[in-house]
Image 1 (cartoon, rainbow, N blue to C red):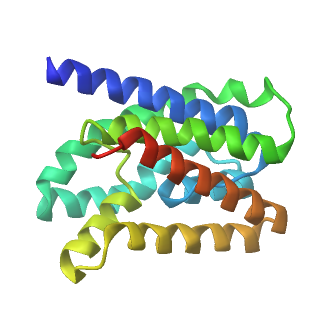
Image 2: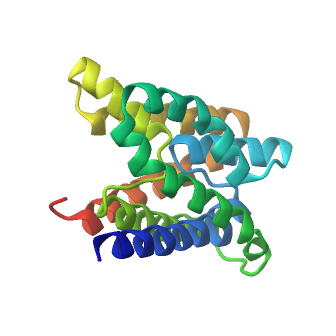
Length: 189
């Protein structure tokens, strides 16, 4: 029964994440953190597929996980693949809604946070920089949340420099909302 629930959490979490990205973040050139944030930057600059870029950019991290942290690999590979495919399938949502960018950052952050939180409750994720942060934390004993915050901050700063100041500000709002929502959904987990 647990594996059915986990599968449903990955599917529903991926759908919520994809709605947040495609309906709210991408149309307004807003970033998320981590590998998704890097994929959004590549999408905004070169019109590359977001989900495909998530897979490509995550490959080195997952190769490392396969050899050094097999447990993390198994717990994240399904979330990575399902969410990446659904992100690209839901691409048509990008033209459905046109709302204020500030509101989009908040609502998009809630959707992304719920999706990530739902997966984390079942010990899975989209992998990416969260996995990398876990590896670094294991080696350095630095809190994994601090490492994730540092990585996300660097990615958003790079995006702000390459794209615009409004992208930077809206992305900070979105990532803050993602963090709060994820924390709320995961609760004591």
